[in-house]
Picture 1: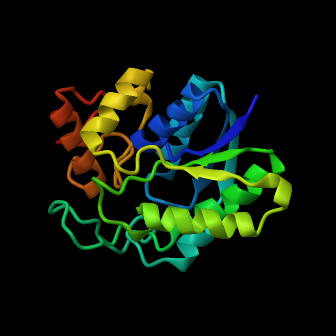
Picture 2: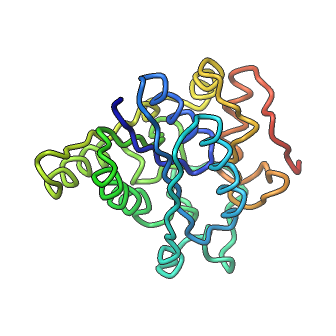
Amino acid sequence: MKKALCIISGGMDSATCAYIAKAQNYEIIGLHFDYNQRTMEKERECFERICDDLGAKKIIIDGKFIAQIGGNSLTDLSMKIREDGVKKDVPNSYVPFRNGIFLSIAAAVAEINACEAIFIGVVEEDSSGYPDCTNTFIKAMERALNLGRTQKSKAQICTPLVNLNKSQIVQKALELGVKLEHTWSCYQNSEFACGVCDSCRLRLAGFAAAGISDPIKYKI
């Protein structure tokens, strides 16, 4: 069976992306990064549940060097996460080059595990405007990563959600049977989602537009 390495943060987007790979008859290997983000333990818990739901092999990478680099409110507790709504600027929750780092490591893991594809749940259409979530960036990374791999181990980077909005992602997740109660999107809290960070606002707006209630619990 062909194999896909799926980068799974524990969020709704990455979970849906992995389910899409499963629907395309890939054997799934789940890849997760712990990088001392505020909700690291919750995200890992969700990753474990998603992989169990998919029957996927689990690989967890210690990426705490990302927190050492700093410069973002997900790993630096002295910085306040924005709560005043999604705007057009790049918020301080942007972790510099995070997806570039993730994909570089994923390329090595995929090569070792003979994966034909790397799935990542980036969303350009309806997001916080992170520069490493664009289709242009992903395609450039795909070219670069394959130049650095052996000729027999080329891999495609698949981004099935990149041009979807959040309501479409919610609908796709429901179609595929994603257990959305096993996903987590909040940047700040691990027991009850805050409902006011960019990620919560985008998720809630997606569920509202889809006419569906979000199964996770919110503080608000």
